[in-house]
Amino acid sequence: MTDPLRGVDLEEGAYVSGHVPHIAPQAYLVRHPKGLDDEGLALAETEATRPMPSVYQEFLREMNGGRILNIDFYGLTGGMLLRDPTDPVGQPFSIAFDNEWYRRADNIPEGHFGFAAANGPLRTQGHFFLTSIGTVEMYHRDEDRIGKSWPSFSDFLLDEITRRLAALDERGKFQDTFQLLPGDTSDWEARAEEKYLDSLSPFARMKRKIWRPR
Image (cartoon, rainbow, N blue to C red; front, side, top):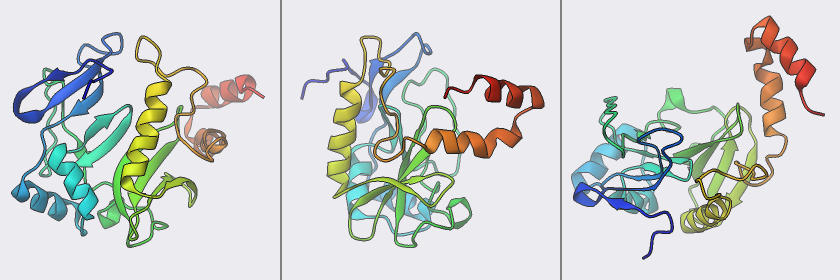
């Protein structure tokens, strides 16, 4: 399959794609680590501390987490934080995020499996979960709100990757009008701003109130 972002193959099935050096020398829009074998999948499920849906196991066989167009997919880390500035692929976020009990929001149903997250404009995040019936739901990071749902994991991938690819300009930047978090999320940033306003310095709070667009 042709890669529209002009990918670079690395060792053992890993690759990167969509180089954006104006962001950072090793910045890429797609970071595809090598996939996991059976042993790696077993370790990943242990790290997640809950049963992993078969559809995400198959995904991890292809790529151990990584990033696709600003969606960070969780993968096996072995509990170690490794940062090599010369490695363009890097390490995925741990699959324990959104799955291990103390990292998981209380409002998330027990049968849901967290597999990815994406940032909004500034203070918002959408967290993606596979449900017990195979659908995908994107939850607000701080509230019991679902921004969008998809019939299946494959529908989610096709819909979001297509949507994000169509919004890239020639420098690999999303167009200004692009909605970073899909679905019913138009008020998420304003609500997050109000929530986190108290954490800002007095000067920053005043500045935000003066210059906040109407």
